[in-house]
Image (cartoon, rainbow, N blue to C red):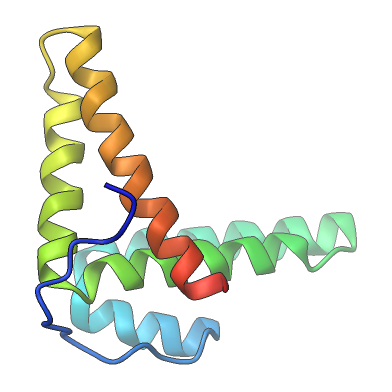
Length: 116
């Protein structure tokens, strides 16, 4: 599975990739993850200040853009969360790897969609 699972339904359109726009989008598609995002933004800002580089902020934005990309498509989000759950509850290493590979493929596809 190298492409996201789309059923044609989008909860929201793809938005600008600014922290403010991503936060607003996340509030619609996965509000329960807002504290995680805010914590990540704080860590990215602190790292950017400490290193004198904007790369931590770019990485933060790219990651959350990919998360929003997954969540704005209900079928993709369902497949992603199901695979993540199954990977975390697998009874064997092989089963865990299989589901983790699905999680990674869906994330990579979403990341590629938003980063070009």
